[in-house]
Image (tube, rainbow over all chains, first blue to last red; front, side, top):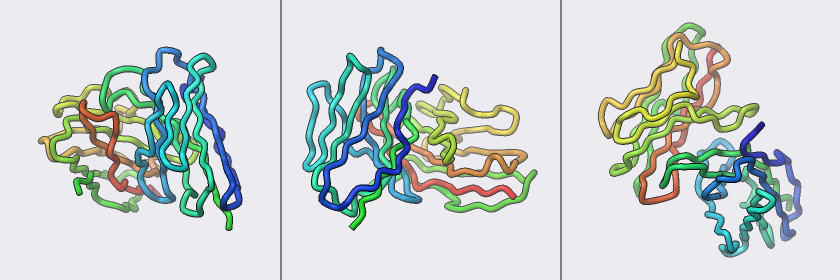
Length: 112
Length: 113
């Protein structure tokens, strides 16, 4: 069974719209959660951490539902520059940079 | 602006040849990771080191892959002999216990013909 699952998409969304996607994880002992962003032919970069109470960073909102074992990312007022692959990342053990498990990513395309 | 560097950026080789990829982690980071990314499998962890000691290489095919850290500023991933199924983008990342983030290098795009 896959540890971190995401809908690969692509999600085709008009500019200015709101888009949301989820990620499910299988290990209930998961400790920390993150969203990474990967642009085409580039390396992944940390977008934001996901806190238990939910958190917001500008147009981006991340939510965690431990009972149902999923995390979500919502993007409001989407921009063309938001087009990228969004990787869901879960940490099961260790600390700091260790123990991260990456999902395969959700491909988002913002259309003009 | 500290960054992880990787060389070469692109490598095209023929089946059976040896391939060596190099990574310079961010100065001060004590954990180094090697990943392989393909469309089919996504990001797969191959191996990682802490303070230059290998901690986990269970994701790496042992018969042909080897990973080392000769010193704190250099990590290497070697494939010998290479096969077409090894074609992928290989990322190196570094991190530390202070931060929850892994910092990725630009990757080496490997094509084995």
